[in-house]
Length: 239
Image (cartoon, rainbow, N blue to C red; front, side, top):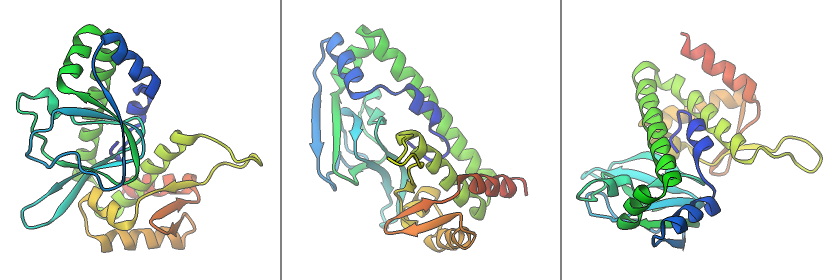
């Protein structure tokens, strides 16, 4: 989840079978859902009484202003949770969730979530660690926004997403060569995540492409040289 660095979160998340095992140990209800792209999980400011775990696919969490402006808060991918509004009395989220790809999810009703917290120590331990790491990630994102200029944040975002993508497959092709690092976001997605204009993202991506560090693909960006991209982030963050 979120771009600054989800490495800590990724190291703590359960697999589908592990999570189902915890829920069954607690004796609670849950539902495995397969949803097509475009399905909404409730609008912001409307009660929604289930949390979700992403087994496969991707879910966008975003905020819509009254004037139609949209701000992407984060994308939930495999191994992420969303729907922590159930921890509050009103169960009212501050944002809207929408599947941006065909996805498989585990839906956990509020009553089941709390019962699992109270009766399954492994589940409680996992949730506490996940929330702590999520707070750390959000704090890091806030620091990045405050200290780094737009031109700096784009390569930093790409590097973080690329590292996340590396960790998600960590596999080699049949001939032993590393799998390509594909960041599955377009310029508009990156602009929404950073809260900057699409033109600013396009300019920064173009500079990186001219240096042979990235290559623009259809609705995605391939990182050709992670080492050089990291050097760019270090140089720009030190300026």
